Amino acid sequence: MEKNYIGEVFSKNEGEKVKLAGWVHTVASLGKLLFINLRDSSGFVQVVVKKDKLDPAGFDEIKGLGRESSVIVEGEVRRDKRAPGGVEILAQKVVVVSASNKDFPIRKGVSSKVLGDYRHLSIRSRKFSKLLLIRSELLRLFREWLIRNGFREFSCPTLITAACEGGATLFELNYFGKKAYLTQSSQFYLEAGIFSLEKVFTLQPSFRAEKSKTRRHLTEFWHLEVEEAWCDLNGIINLEEAIVADVLRELDSKIGHEIRSINPNFSPPQKPFKRITYDEAITLLSREGIQIEWGSDLGADEEKILVNIVGGPVFVTHFPKSTRAFYHKPDPQRNEVVLSNDLLFPKVGEIIGGGERISDYDVLLRRIKEEGYSPEDYSWYLDLRKYGSVPHAGFGLGIERILVYILDLPNIKFAVPFPRTISRIYP
Ligand code: NSS
Image: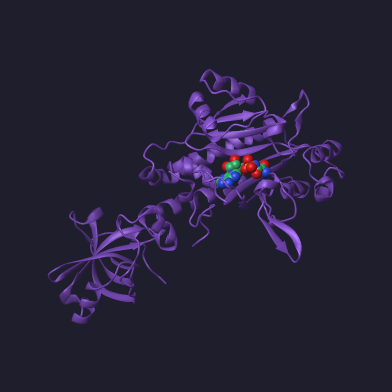
């Protein structure tokens, strides 16, 4: 349908004709006048309906409309200082497309449980629409950055047969009588993809049966994963730094005002990000009185403390082998650590996990066995090391995690329209 968006009307001149289509937020009546607060995907505007402009039945119907009723309004622009945003629409015609039931469940003051139970309706709110717009823009900028820098989008399966990130968090399902799982990461398939396209990425959900109820874990999250042939640990860290810093800067220049309407303190982080090793990280933490035994992983709390000590985003590299999945390449200088990296961000901790992969067949086979996996489950993955193996590296970035940082969200469930957590799979 040919229509104007509400966002456009504020730059129009007095008297210009417009056709708006949207949803009634509120209707207030003042004698022979009605004031509709009309919403569409681009914002809100006040529509004034005069009784003498419509037939009486029409006027009364509009007066009685419930919240979220859908309407089409034709009218003209009036510049009026008293109207919100300095502009209102004087209606000449109002068509009610669908009158809403009167029991719209999202009202001021309802509990977060109700907002969650009615997520299919609560995403219409002003704040949620903004948030979803920011999310959509972020996804677009990531894709565009990668394509601009020579990466190809490579589609990976969701149904898989073997763990990438450890067996404990696999969702198992019955695949025609055989065991299968929902993917935890598309990394292994991207690793196959580099032998075809060299620089690949995918943006798709990953699934983790995370039993822990935290403010940064979903059971289904959107995963931006990147893999590059002929790349080492340093190369992949440089790439992670460039994409994150560039995309956040672009996002700020495009819709910084929208971001700051949710998080007034947002400013994009500047390159270069600090780089420290795991050993340096535990030394820094011990100076703050936090003792990490060498070989234990960093938890969310320690990550946040580290970010505070460093004063901004920080790469932690060279984790102990025991803390990382089997595919990470052991450091040739020091076999007990791997060429891995995490990127830690303020407010949320880890947003990226990545590193250099084992490219040698025998080393990979040994690591698979050491971790107690069966090599048959990984035979196609091992094949990649048989036919022209190359050094390569990659990373995975959690889209919702970076949104928690950008918008300073109190919980990751607000970063996705329909969150999946240990306690929610509906709606
Ligand atoms: O487990 S990761 O650290 N790494 C991988 O999955 C690699 N196989 C990725 C790769 O190299 N291609 O997860 C990567 C990121 C992590 O830093 C988080 O930002 C995010 O994925 N992540 C999550 N976000 C939300 N909820 C959960 N449960 C979650 N798990 C990981």
